[in-house]
Image (cartoon, rainbow, N blue to C red):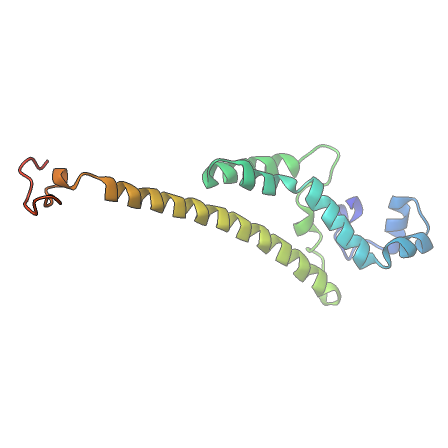
Length: 161
């Protein structure tokens, strides 16, 4: 994972990967089949460890604003941890992709877009909740005090204000 995180997908060779994993090429191929499959597993491992804060923030925070605040704070911490590559693997691994590995760049883009969609869904859910509360409050507001007709008499209330 670290090799892909530091150098990007295309810049990492099989030799780099076998050296980082302290294995021989046949073992890598036997375990993963190819570089792309190993990369996909590395991305999954990254998302489930260093990227888990996104899902947690959006699921655990009481509001979308608090979730985004927490997400941004935890991203800043996570992407600058001492001893680890800087930044996000989902971004850095795609920065040097050529046409030959455009499918890798596209898959990473889809993952990033899914994260954005998750944030948008959380904001939309909060917006819907706020709109429902506002609708309820407006229906519950005493209409007589607003100078509207009384539901009992059909006449205007005299104590408007």
